[in-house]
Amino acid sequence: MTKLLLILGFNQFLITFILYLRSNLAGLHLFKTDSMISVLDRLLMIIICAILLWGHVGHHQMDIMTFVYTQTSAYLLTAIITFLIVLRKTDKFRLNWNWPFSVMILKKSIPYAILVLLMTFFNRIDTVMLYHILPGSEEANQYGISGAVQASIYAQSYRLLDAVNMFAFLFSGLLLPIFSRMLKFRESIEPLVKLSFSLLITPAIVIGIGCCFYNKEIIETLYNKHADQSAEVYRLFADQSAAVFRLLMWCFMCQSMSYIFGTLLTANRNLKELNLLAAGCMILNISLNILLIPHLLAFGSAISALATQFSMALAQILIVQRIFKFRMNYRLLLTLAVFTIGVIIINFFSINYHFDSKKWYLNFGMMVIISTLLAFLTRLISIKSMFRLLKYG
Image 1 (cartoon, rainbow, N blue to C red):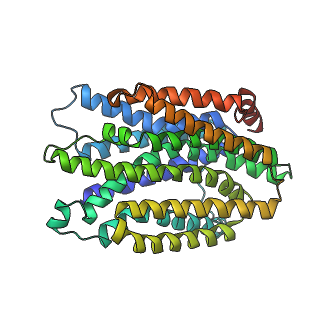
Image 2: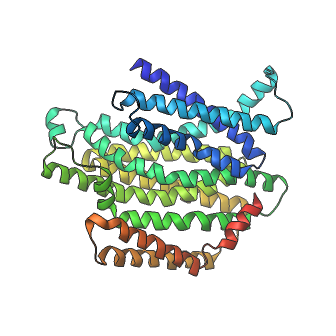
Image 3: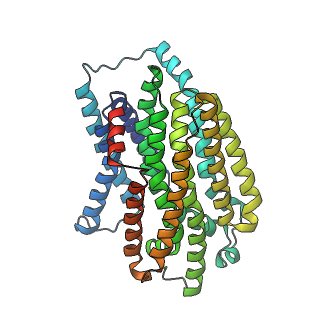
């Protein structure tokens, strides 16, 4: 366990180093390079794991330590490649420790560090509270109400939320330097906020609503029945996971809005407001978990997560409106409402059109294609708008 923890700590150092190097690329407005680097570590890890699993390399099965070593290799290669790219773009490279400058950087970084810590708390504390609040006896485990079982049910759905969130996270990484530059030169940011909101909330609505309709199919496809589970127990756990997943996917829409308006507030250095908001959301999340977990188990944590993410997004929008005084775009809101209703109708028909639970992905794919066409028809997104975003970069 100690060895695993040390390697994971080294991996975290590599991740932080990669993020630091990527910040240099973003600062140089090398967004295409930054985008490729952002997925390089995952791509390398997939390739290495594929070779180990199907390339008949070695004589042992994949275990947790092999997987961690694979992560380390992928992160290390990515760090080296990124460092070489940054080195090529700089005139000179020299290690120089300047104490006054370092202290100044640390002081200026404290509000950002506190913000990350607070947001990590209310985003990740749910599974910890599930594990510790609920009983841990064998009888509780048998009936699926133990902390370990409910935490795993919640984690199944939350890791899928994390996966779809990567797109929004990468998008916010592109927006931060653009917002910072525009604010520095006192350029109007309202068109960019509207553009980025449309480009990000549109796929969030499609994915969020689609996962709500196809929640059971997605969960049952990704998580197979264990050999020691009866069909009845498996069905119970699958139904619980699907219900939690359906609720958590609404968080994706809230988080997508936070990635836009929170990024804008960060670029504008409204760290005091963001830290107070994050602290309030952390208290709200913990309080709701304490109240709901004993009665609703993992579903209670999902309600808590949705309430917290919605509160965070709404408060950020109100703060942005108070600071920047944007004009209310009723046309955009009406278009979004029509699009959302349209996506719901498309999902309803797609899931009932010659639906075969074993080939549900065909219906899901058809839904995504038709919803994308609707987004272009309603002009929420367009090829022209995507090129406009590149122009801002």
